[in-house]
Image (tube, rainbow, N blue to C red):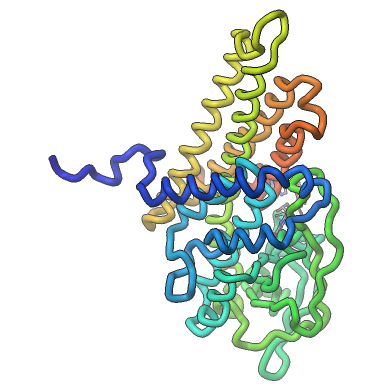
Length: 388
Ligand SMILES: Cc1cc2nc3c(=O)[nH]c(=O)nc-3n(C[C@H](O)[C@H](O)[C@H](O)COP(=O)(O)OP(=O)(O)OC[C@H]3O[C@@H](n4cnc5c(N)ncnc54)[C@H](O)[C@@H]3O)c2cc1C
């Protein structure tokens, strides 16, 4: 018999290497993260020793080539890592997601060789990255940003404020988008690599959030921040391309976060309803409950297929824009539905912090907001279907 055609394999059929990787990350999450989830949520922080363990696990530089100290794996591996971690804690999932699908991804695609040599080994070993596009006045309309970059001598001065920046508390390297010419609209937008220690840079207020509380979300303050010329990422005036292209890929990662989160909620719900007895039988024995769980499992399966399909398209160099928007839209809606059902089926125990599902219910909400709200995903899908 001839070798099976890879392209004809079922989407969820992982290669041996992918399966081992997923199982390893999930085992880590269950052993090293699960016991800390409640405490991390209460403290709104991910402890530094856990961050170190994530670097040791090899999930902080997944696509970084081995010559720069990374794992040299695929984007699909990043998606698997985010899914596996988010099954246990979506806050840890998004830390790893931003590092890989946004920061490293942007550096690998747009960084000059010298920039890659300088930053990729650090990102693979110990440096956390953050991706700073949003501002108080520009979210969905991201290129209406007001942070200004002005040329000065052999470098740039950046002034403005960024809002909502994931990993802001922990990060040492920030991709900051600023405009070199506000009159040029999106054509003025430029990406800069800003180190935490650069003069004029500071991390401001950390947000107190509804969900993914352990993930830090911070304001960044740039006050005449000095950035050397070689820290322009890509070309001046082409930052909009960097942002669009990385976010198109990043939203597949958010889809994976939502799939993992939904699977986690489903796992808890199945275990609980098989234990809990009412009317002399297990809650899982009521047919009404079985049907609800069946529907939730079907949604999670569909969301996972959509995420895997988008990631596989991306890794094989095929168009994936529509699929990325669809998978993020669908997976985040699934996460809302599944976690809501989980709370319902836990009854009163679903409403208190001693059980895990109230947190996942809160965590699910962010899926419809960041890296493009659901409405913005619908705009993107409509553009692909109907043209401008
Ligand atoms: C926890 C968290 C982490 C984040 N992390 C990051 C990060 O790391 N880096 C970063 O740069 N940003 C980050 N963000 C910002 C996030 O991407 C934005 O919040 C998001 O893009 C929405 O922007 P906005 O909040 O300004 O809402 P707005 O854009 O003001 O939207 C408000 C409402 O209007 C709707 N709307 C807007 N435009 C349209 C339209 N054209 N058609 C229909 N409806 C529309 C939206 O869907 C939404 O419902 C984060 C946000 C949060 C909450």
